[in-house]
Amino acid sequence: MAIQLIVHGGAGLVAGEHHAAVMATCSAAVASGIAHLREGGTALNAVEIATRILEDDPLFNAGYGSVLNRDGKVEMDALIMDGRTFQIGAVAAVSRLKNPISLARRVMEATPHHLLAAGGAEQFAAEQGFELVPPEHMIAPRQLATKSDGDTVGAVALDSAGNVAVAVSTGGVRGKLAGRVGDSPIPGAGGWADNALGAACATGVGEGIMRALLTFRAVNLLETHGAQAAAEAAVALFEQKFGGDGGLILVDREGKVGIAHNSPFMPVAWLNGDQISAQVAQK
Ligand code: ASP
Image (cartoon, rainbow, N blue to C red; front, side, top):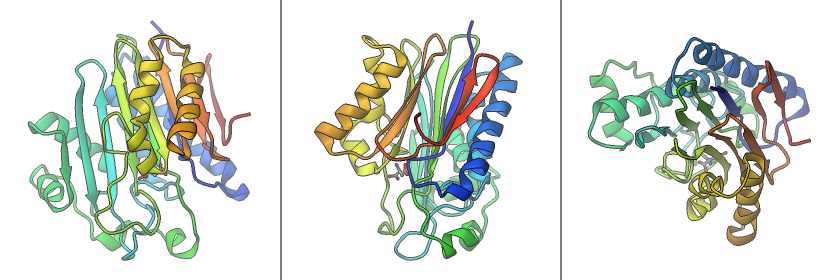
């Protein structure tokens, strides 16, 4: 059975000087997740492994190096979803976690809930033994010095048992109001996974993605479309009907990928035959 892992590095602008580094980290994230899948690992583990690597790179707007809100603070959202069980774990507006995606997974596996926010999520993290870092330690010099935006991260995978999963992690949008939560931790908006069809992960202006339920739509378009056609149709509808900006990646049950965005850039890397391919924008 085919395996696949595709990651994205957000729909924001990517300065030319960062193209190579962004593609290198996306490729490294795919390589780690694929190594796990080749050993028979699960799609769920693979998307978490890949997303943690992207969160750790301050070039991306997720984990360390997330964008700052209007009050100069980092507030991050993340979601993980298992297409086999429809189980979901998500966190919103957390400020003290290096890897919000792993806390999202713990919410899925160790609570009866799907989404924990802010102080309550951090209290749960502490109870579960996660390190809570001072909020200012999440701020990378780049965020103080530049006007970077977007660069949310996400991953979708198919494992050798035919299971799909999605992970999404973001600092949200620059200058947002404190407490603003975007699409990323909202199931069907930032990410959706359904073993019967595939999995998708979105990036872009979250308010539009939420209204469009973009990833739910994209995955359900796989009933009638191939992977690339489904991604393109979802983004076209997102733009026309909801005035949305951004893009998405998806994987179908055969491991075929779809990549579509109406933003100038959306870095991606994926398994292409035996090789890892990476690009900063759709050719
Ligand atoms: N979708 C994210 C949000 O609105 C941002 C992004 O993808 O760049 O929070």
